[in-house]
Each structure stands twice: as C-alpha cells, then as structure tokens.
Length: 383
Image (cartoon, rainbow, N blue to C red):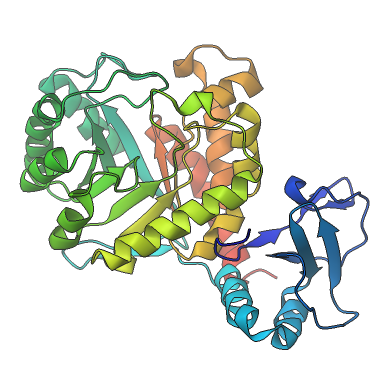
C-alpha cells in the first residue's frame, strides 16, 4: 500500500485548527505543537511509545505528528526497515535542495533568489499566446524583450500541451523551434534557453542548435530522451501528468493527490539517475493544470513545500492557468496577471526555485519582495 517513498508534510493551520491532509480524514480540531511536521506510515507498524509525538489513525495508514526534533528522536525507535526512510525524509524536509548545475559547469543557487523562466510558445494553439509568435522574427523579438525584463531562461515550445491539444509531428515541432533557438543564442549568448518537448528527436536538434535545458512534460516517456540528456549533461525538468494532453482532464480524481504526485516524481528521479543523468541536473515540476482539477491545483500550491522532501529543485508553471481564472473570475487568460502574481509569490514562499511565467517584469518585481523575505525565512536571519 505504501510502496512510494516516505514524504514529510506540513500541517495546514487554518483558523487555529490543526488539520492533517484530507486522505487520512481525521476529525478536527487537534491540539498539536507548532511548528509541526507529519510523517505518513502504513498501518500495523509497531511504533515506539512517547508523549512527544501524536499518532493519528486514518483510512490509509497512520500520521505521526510532532516537531522536527521530536520526530527525529522518535524515529530511532522505529522498526529497522522504517528508520532510515523516515530519517531521510525528515532530513530532506529540513534541508531542501534549491540548486542545480548547467552542462558548462555553472551552478545556480536559488535559495536567495527565485529564477525566472519566460514562456515562448511558437505554436498556433497554445492556451494563452497561441499564434502570437509563430514567425521567427516575432518570437525572437519577444524572447529578447523577456530577457531584458529579467528572464534568465526562455522556454521555447513548438507543441501545445493544453487540454485536448492535437499532437504535433516531431519534425514539424523541430522546424518551429530549432531556427528560433539558434537565432536566440546568437542574439543573447548568455541567456539560458530551454526546449519544451517530449520528443527526443526534437530535443537533439534543439541541443545541437544551442539549447541549454530540456523541459519534458512527459518526464522521459520517450525511451531515447534519458540517454540523450545524460550524454549532453544538460539540466532536465521532469513533470507530473496523468495521461496525455488529450486525456489528462478526464483523469483528475485522486485518492491521495500529493502522495501520488510525490511518489511519481521520486520514481522518475530514480529512473533518470539510473539512466545516467546526474542528480544535480534534475528539476521537478508538479504539473499544475495537467490532469488536475481546480481544487487539486489549489491543494498542490497549498502543500507545495512537501515536495521539497524529494530533494530536487522545484519548477512551477502557474502563469495564467485556468484555475487562477476560476478563483479570480477572470475568463481571458491574458488578463490573469494579478492572480498569476499571487500564485507565483505563494510558490516562491513555499520553496519553488524556478517559476515559468508569461509576464516577466511584473513577476520579477513581485518576487524581488518574496525572495527577500524567503531568504530571511530559510537562512534564519532576522529572527
């Protein structure tokens, strides 16, 4: 039942009531020490007895809650098979990874400053900017403008992955993105360029044209993708999506959304490493809007910090998403700036390392404030 990696969750503190994540369905209110952590364990384990933690029994297992220090001490008395996973999870949550490395050896530490990835879709049918940048000159001008506004990465995509999007032949996809990537690297040599593709053949041509990163919404589903990324030594983004863009919004019900999402990403990290991809080249994307309901997207954003226990940097793409429109009542994607900024700030404060966005300047200014506060929070300064 609990074959996935042990994850550590924060509890949701709402109006003074301590509520555990919904899959355990424990009755509130609970009186628990703050700040409080929670470890998920299967039912039937012989737990050590102590007054320093609280054990909750639910439909799918047990939740053991307490402070970080109390749980670390308590874990020493667990049965042997569960000691190391629990300790590892607690350590991962206490010391998340917010850095990664490029193929040329440059190291990016995102602890003090969230990095900005500008979105550039050279497609006729993307949900927000489809058709705006289908010509290379128009796309190049927009990419340069995003770089001038503060984007450190520009993510170039030639296939829409919006719900029900029609698949694009990899040859056509490459014809859209490769000339632009080459032109962009000539115009802005220091700018990092990512290719947004799930096809290894497109990724290969994009890397040959100068791309620095592969952003794969299918998390290496193409058998040739992992060996290619490993050989190139470039960073790769692995995203969670249930199904395909054509089917994903038919499959938005989960028994345990965060558990399934975290388990999937942890397993994809393991597979990537086994294929030869260095751990410091892997970033994770929870896949907002990809096989999730509006309520599910809210839950992921609320509990985003839990995914840092996988110990890989988080990249989030929230910009102009439909659930933001539903929360704000703004129907047109291009008019969802305020909601997108709020979501970006929330993700930054929860520990995201990179945000993928349309509106670069406004997001940069909002995250300048969030990053300053986050650095003080993470570093302990100002306490």
